[in-house]
Length: 165
Image (cartoon, rainbow, N blue to C red; front, side, top):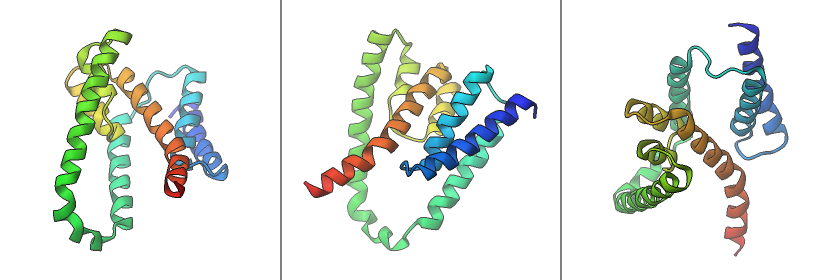
């Protein structure tokens, strides 16, 4: 690891700590993303080595975190909720297809990049799948990052308002 890469790692860690200290929703994630991206841009890095391995470790850690916090008693609701979850996913996919068509026209993106830029889902999973199918992954990743940061910052406030309404 050279000095620039180390600076990005420190910016991710520092941004995560700052995001949490500021009370941002998912502060470690949002702050770390913002800190790392700003540092990466400032030092002029386009890619960092080990990204694939880091993504795998990150996905495993997220899976473990979800398993740790999972309430298995909720599985009793699975048969009742599964059809609703499938319908929700189908509706979100249809909306994503419409948004992708709009991105193709307005932003002059190729169809594959536009499609992988719009659906909600796992950031790394979509980036990997999109790259495998020929999308312009950095563009798709940009849209996904903006969406995730926006959602993490806005939804908690909306949820508070929604539950009081």
